Image 1: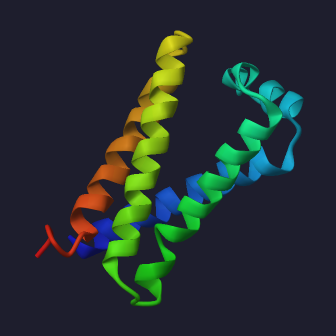
Image 2 (image 1 turned 180 degrees about the vertical axis):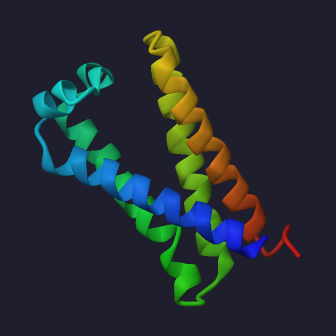
Length: 124
C-alpha cells in the first residue's frame, strides 16, 4: 500500500507542479489558448494565485514525506489539492466542459486517497 501512496503522490506532485508553473509563467491569453478556456472567467491575478497554490500543493504533497517531517503536512497538502479540484470540477461543470470533469474527478479522488492514507489519525 505504501508504494501505491508514493506513486499517487508523485503523480499529483508532477501534475500540479507542471499545471501551476504553466499558469504562473504564462499570460492569461496563453493559458486560454493552450486549452484553458475556463481562464476567461477569471482575472489574470486570480489565475496566478491558482497557479501558485497548485505549485505549493505540488511541492507540499511530496516533500514532507521525503524528509520524514510528518504525514500531517502531506495530508493537509492533499486536502488542499482536493479543495482546488472541487473548485475546478464546479467550474468545468458550470461551463459544461464535460471532458475535463473526468480528469478533474480523478485528480480529486487521488488527492482524497493520499490525504486519507497519510493522515496519522486515520491510517495505521
